[in-house]
Length: 261
Image (cartoon, rainbow, N blue to C red; front, side, top):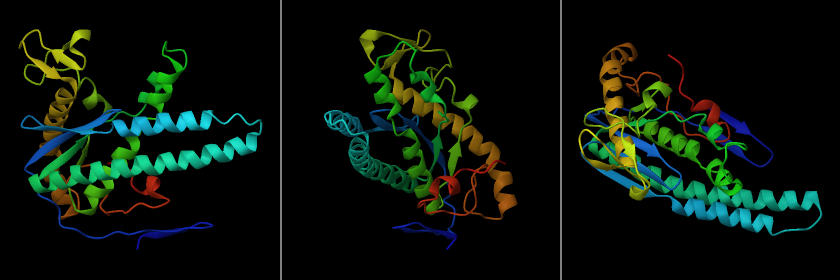
């Protein structure tokens, strides 16, 4: 047992264990979107639908907004109750999806590559020319929770996680995976992009996963040998990840953050 946290009505334990690292033969990129998680590489891409989380958030906002009682305390209690319910239902959907993603990656011996999209909420602030409902929908996007669940599930079984930097993430969904040219968008194609050089049309999410997987493969090949030698067969072979495997509880956010190398 690594540590424990005692609150008024809960006891949370953080547990570590030594596991044999999964020898990865390839990489798979994970593109986090509002309505789906897209996972894949240049061989195969799978999209996991998360549109139900958007519906849950919209329903919660509607229910909370329907209470017009002029009592701040009562409205706060109601909002907290339905907010916790929304978090629990969304977390369960993400849990089912991330568990499948990690299980498939282990079966295929693929290291998981995660993009760095911290600070993306700055794009959805008041004054950016966007509607209030649109901003609320995007700011309710649980991309951080999806990453947290993938990380701790992968570490628990020794699967490598590759964290790309913000610079490495930049342009992953707008760069042609074949020639490297910037892809062009067209409103008539919805989420599909086309390359003026290769003359191909690809789904935006597939483009992102292929580029993430390729960039992660380059990072993995460059960082793995020295890390394995330095750690002597530690749990993870990827630079930047902590050695102990942590099952998160109350203090999960402060224990599962990758350490700086």
